[in-house]
Length: 410
Ligand SMILES: *Cc1c(COP(=O)(O)O)cnc(C)c1O
Image (cartoon, rainbow, N blue to C red; front, top):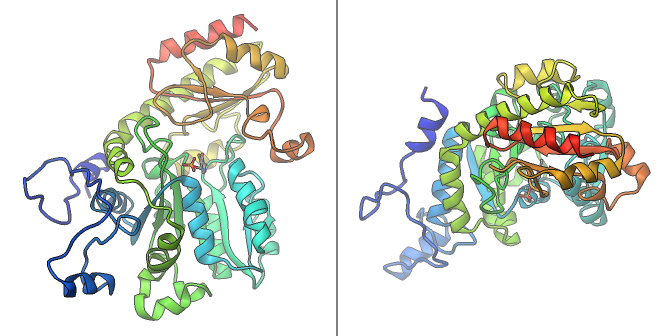
């Protein structure tokens, strides 16, 4: 079997380009014309595999999807406008009013807000379980549970659950396991091997190749029997193992209008080509930064799954092939000290993105989690003296130097 980067680079286009372009062209076109009325009729009926309108499908987006599908050995991939659009489409395709989903309280902030506020008002219930305890998960599942949901590395708690235990719970209950693999990407974590049914990824982060555009993907690993999902089952007769993809393409994704822009797909393909190189450098930098911080008296504690002091170290080592992601979380004395530290950095930028080529730092309590009360934040594991650093791909010595100077100034 070919390696990761070879696969990305040498996935062939579905049709030969008329000019033989070696890089797939950017088709920034909304509509596609047909030779005759029968042709467009067949395309609309799904009998002719052709593009009609770019909200539904587009050649450049399809090329990016094909590379993601090859990389993940999955049944199919749908590229969408953002990571949040990926999560929203999956929930809308699988759940109805009165459904519940079982998840961890430690989730990306906007995901919690989507589940509780946006979809909560349409009748979705979210039940929180301890993802390290299968009996806690099983006790929350009932006949209205439509999926289990978790993140490969929680942010910013940096917890890593044993995903094979959770997929076993999901299989036992006959519900799909949906995993947000944004922080790991298919380079660090092959979700199919852990029997994850559907993976969602925000391509905005590592895949975009340096924060070039907001985007997301939905990956159907082809492991779940969609006859067992009440909303998708009616399509299973006609589409078989492609029922979930058909539900998205022929209804939810099409109707929500959450398509990825062709330009973003083109940039994502470019980013994908160097993903392995960049992610290795980012993870190695994160490890060096975590080790350095752990040796500093002014730093109260450091959380990084790569450190043996992390409760997630053993599970992460096995699941993520010896690498631990680009995020490092650490505690200083208090919020004021965190702010002084951020303000005195020169190379590490103060921004809310993560897994950019540039190293970024943020104070989560006053930004990403500011819509929650102090009590709610404590419940989510967001301390007021906590900083989150996302290691980029800069030269390691320059990052350490910047952090050292920052600590001297607090
Ligand atoms: C950023 C992020 C998202 C949301 O992605 P967008 O592309 O910003 O919509 C979802 N999950 C995780 C873990 C993220 O880091």
